[in-house]
Length: 445
Image (tube, rainbow, N blue to C red; front, side, top):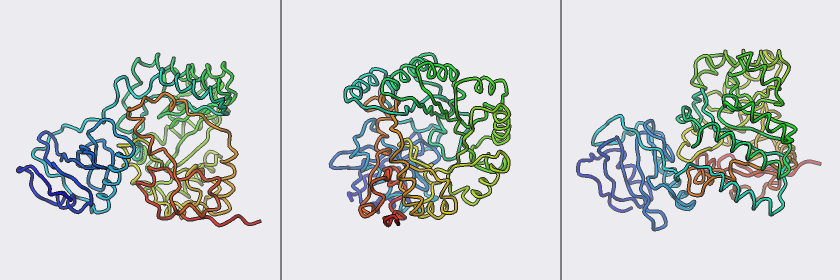
């Protein structure tokens, strides 16, 4: 490692000593005068990359360790450079004991700026149209279209990568322009053959034009529609009646605890459990749409998983399905600190393997369940993610695609489920490593 060129006013301390132990070339380490932060230059493949290190609680960032938040100050980095920054962050995380302070020249309330995006935002209809034309030219056909509604959520879930965006309203042009773009995407989905529709977003039911979207999809020929929502909006019976009268078929609703204390601790929103229970009761009394309860395996709530599953069956007569935390946006990976390792996940879900739904590594499940789920996933209808078609090159969302890419580490080479397994998301590999991944034996005749 090169000698550290630190600011003379910057005191030596545990963080500087940690940086000296990381096997990466860094230089120009200086204290920032306006916030509690260090700026440094990391050399990745001969290229200088400007980084900023702050206390983990003070900033959105590319990655976090127990004590620190790490951001890159360059707005657009290629996947190889991002991989180098991720490796540096991971190496620093391995030796961070927690409680390490960032030496600073001054401490103020100024926050690190959000990573820059390209002018005009992350999504462009022109980009969407160009990529759609290419998909159509290849003759690709899909059964399901995935639509993303940009809508703030009232929850502030502890694991949610977008919790600090919860008050952000929609894209440039406002809600009316967003509605136009959504209907444009719906038309495109139908042109690719899709007849089923999954509408995702932080809280789709809070979107001002949600009923317009549902009705437009029905007119266009979508035969089955599902939306994602924390569900509390349905506690308003008048609104629930309008939803029940619409063509919407089902709502995917998350639940994180069997009582208010447990659920609200995860959502960060007092009263959210009581509102959710009331909402499910209202929808049940109306008879539609279907409520599909889901939960996530979190380290913080793992001990309550059995009681949660029992509660939803006893209270609502509903079977709750289980999923795993996934990486979302680069710069907001700290939520994965609440994700069990692959080994821990395998232990936690073993008693409930028939409820576990994943498009991740199948080897966290018992072999029989893994092979059955793999075959089901392989046979599942193809899905087109409409939002992804319109992501601008160089935007923040474009830079996060690496985390969504799937790969097979070397441990997967001898796995009998390799042909049906979706592999491991790169973001999960960076955060969790490969410990706990294991080749599955062949199925028994």
